[in-house]
Length: 344
Ligand code: DAH
Image 1 (cartoon, helix red, strand yellow):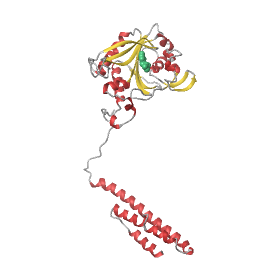
Image 2 (tube, helix red, strand yellow):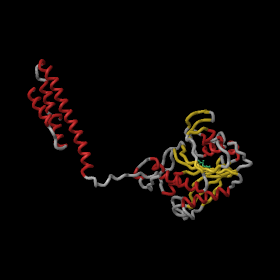
Image 3 (cartoon, protein in one colour):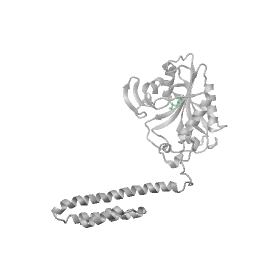
Image 4 (cartoon, helix red, strand yellow):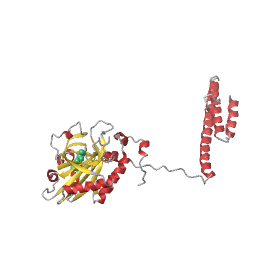
């Protein structure tokens, strides 16, 4: 046994592999599950206990030698192959840089912001975790309004200083923050994520995105609202897109309306998307209710204004004809890749 170890030791010390395959042969020969070291350990079991004391140490040192040699040869081989790779041919083309693409919701959000910026609107944001006051009460929601129900809203904590804490259900809460923290005139849009307690399906999700708009000044009228939104639609969906306003109800606006645009697919002739009506709804809007202005300490005798709110998913669906809302949050590269890539 002693002799064998001496012989193997000199073999290992002088071993210099030409390539990775030779090193692998070395590994199998000495360190493999059926290798020589394994055999030596088998043989070790048969020697006398006196001999064991000496040979145990020798055998362990031999094993370490073999393993150490293998490790250092392996490292030097990888370093070598990496450096020779680049040194060998510097004229090889570089590796392609794969740039990402913007998420469709980000593209549309950006487009909406750009249009309103041209009209002099600022961009502001507010918190996603809101209190009852900013999400509901200041916006004139009555105490018993169904939106306050557990079924619709994700509540976080009961009874804070300004009421229960919840995930905001709409970006209208940012209007309130803006009016509370500043002095009129206000002209801003407020994009952001909102949350509702909905079962996830192709048509509903527990979170989505909205853009809120607010314009408060002296003598702001419904005509201003109509013209602004008309311009917005022409810019976003193309010249010639028709709009119509239908009376509606929101606690925070009076009068309130919903705005439809002529169907982006059939241009009004009737198709599946517009359910053969020729029109699709894209937003809610109205004149800010004087109660809301007063709640935010703004003189409702002096100031008037309008507000509107739209869903970014809805507009993205119309622009790109995406039929399943879940695609927006699944991060499937095959879906995301299809949208124009931009670096900024
Ligand atoms: N907050 C409404 C919603 O989430 C959308 C909305 C409607 C916002 C009318 C407004 C508005 O500012 O005036 O459904």
